[in-house]
Amino acid sequence: MITLDLMNSTEFQDYLNSAIKSYAKSNVQSGNWNEKESISKATEQYAHLLPDGEKTTDNKLFTIRSNGQEVGMIWQASDGRYRKVGKRNWHQEYRTSCLCP
Image 1 (cartoon, rainbow, N blue to C red):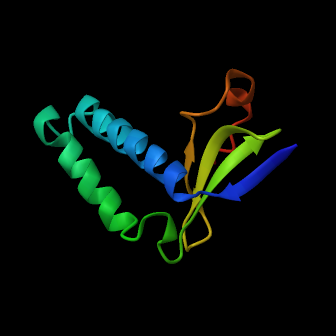
Image 2: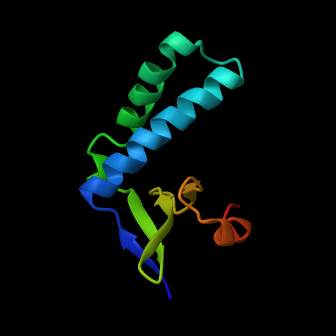
């Protein structure tokens, strides 16, 4: 059974740490940022988007579970669109079933 559960603070910190590193790396690879500034810029942008962490108004962060096992995450913003589908936790069998738009 697949379930969506609101992220708790521990899950959010795990997600945030991974997301910041991934976002920083992506911006370095694309030439937008230099490596030295990448982590601080990524951290700043996430702090702007989610100032109250997983409890930020008009944002919902969900952990996706299959039979109780974490397989991914979804971030739903106030405009109703899905802002991010975190593939970092998707187990191999679920990677081809991504909900990406």
